[in-house]
Length: 179
Image 1 (cartoon, helix red, strand yellow):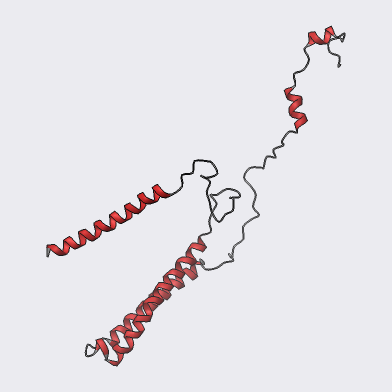
Image 2: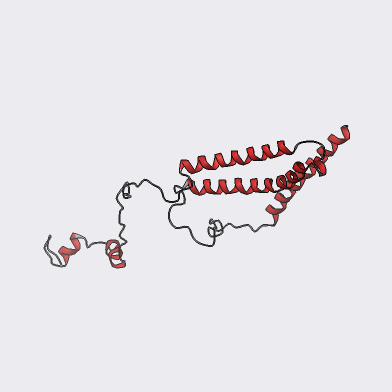
């Protein structure tokens, strides 16, 4: 009996060692990128435009989840249908057990539960791609500030010091007059 537990323990230990050994090997083998370009987020080869944290429409997630649920349930229904044929005819592994009617009722209950879930999601409106209510036109919370970049001439004019009043007087100009 303890030998069975030892088998499970060895199997779990080998699995953990395999996972961590691959993680360590990956950290040693992968290239080290220390430049800013190497640390950029890469997704589909395109640079990110705009804010990355946007409100995501939950309907995409809901439709994907409903698809996954129904795909998995279809995978369960094919073997059930094959076994049901033998169970109803009382042949094969179900011979003499009398479980044909029970298997049929159980499968129908399974399908009914799936369709009740589908009807709930549908009635809730999560499967509608075009929403029924309309909101007002989008108005940003704060007005956009237009940033003007100064030209090279403006930058050099700002950086060039103005002549001192004493230098202007020495040149023969009166104070307050433009040169």
